[in-house]
Length: 270
Image (tube, rainbow, N blue to C red):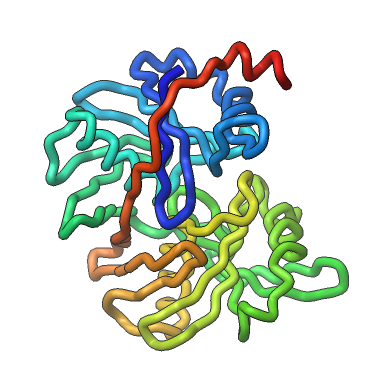
């Protein structure tokens, strides 16, 4: 199987062409094998490029085998893949996802993604109180095509991230679990965020999570209108929630390497 490894600010993915959709039904198994960092290639997620020239579509599976509706970092990487392989000429291209078609454009060597409209229908966007292991948390729900819970903290540096990330992700308040954004407000146009991703755990960056944190912070008046820098462990994204209720994300995409892997041999070793 031929593959290409990409990352968006350290959030890394394995890309495989599957235009006929033949591999997607085995996505759970393949993701667990290929994403394993000791026994496989190693990645946060496995992306199948399906569809055709009319609309190439991203199907993404987390390292635990669960399928994600949308991923902001992966879709920038897929745009770079399509351009690099001559499958699209750009500078603007649509990419299909389970949560709908997203439009990406190339600008100054970066990728600007129209992430669509934030959805505050869960709990009407009002704060959700989560009691876990004797501690009470306040999470603000929003969907960016996938579920998020934004939690504001005074100091990210003092947060026991590895303990509270999985606890809040899997809390019963979320019907299908949720990505959790622990967010510190640095300035009126700057957030610092660490994301515990549903199905992947701690990642160096999360595009949809950066969008979720920004729109919730704007709603609460914690940041001003205009572009907001979101600093993640792997680098910075720029998020802007514009007047027509659409959210735009700007960031990089980096190809790491290409290769061929023998799936049958990988399965026999496991």
